Amino acid sequence: MSTEVRMPKASPIVTIDSLDLEAQGVARQSNEEGGKVLFIRGALPTEQVTYTITREKARFAKAKLHELIKPAVYRTTPRCTYFGVCGGCSMQHLDFAAQIAMKQRVLEDDLWHIGRIKPDEILRPIAGPAWHYRHRGRLSVIDRSIKKGTILVGFHEHNSSYVADMLTCEVIPKRISDLLVPMRELVGSLSIRDRVPQIEFAVGEDVNQPSTPQIALVIRHLLPLTPTDLQNLEAFAKHHQVGIWLQAQGPETAKPFYPTE
Image (cartoon, rainbow, N blue to C red; front, side, top):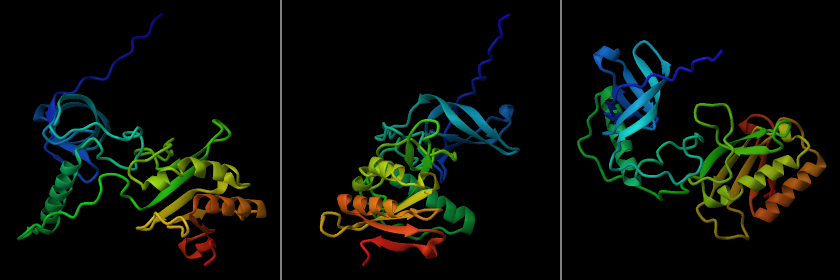
């Protein structure tokens, strides 16, 4: 006896009106469909799309892009392999200049709707590089060795507690991106590999002086490190020319490990 598989009902076509702070396209259902505000992940202003609802409330619904009927002129191909899965960034499908304009529009809208503030003058935005601009961040760590034999170091997947299986990143500095795989190997060498929940990073402005580490890694560990662990950490720091701090509990417990000064 065969079982009929029901496919999700196709939604009507909607036009995206704006973008919210989470880079979700904002639209509204017709009155016949319920008249709810829609927040559609992956959709951009002016685009015509169909969608699939993922979460529904009384007055609004969350959805994901199902089919792109009419793309926006500023839509572009994401540079990162993991975009859409990794939650580290949300606008790579939007041209860089358009990203800045959208963020400015969101800020203006919030100033008005929250505080009824309308600027007399808006200055030109101060813009940095389009890529490798995030000089501080927190990477999550998870030990998957029991099931898949590897350590993951990276950002969480979009709206998930899972860590993205990422080998590179286009928004963090390239030197940190290049360390994602070595950091996996470092954590895997520790006796407490399943008790290292996160690694924070901070990058100084000058990373071109190998004699003075300009990268700081703060390694959070829930159990004491063994002498062998400490040797592995020091060897890693020397080889990759980075500074390492250790944090056993709250932020106030963070202290320099290498170099000691």
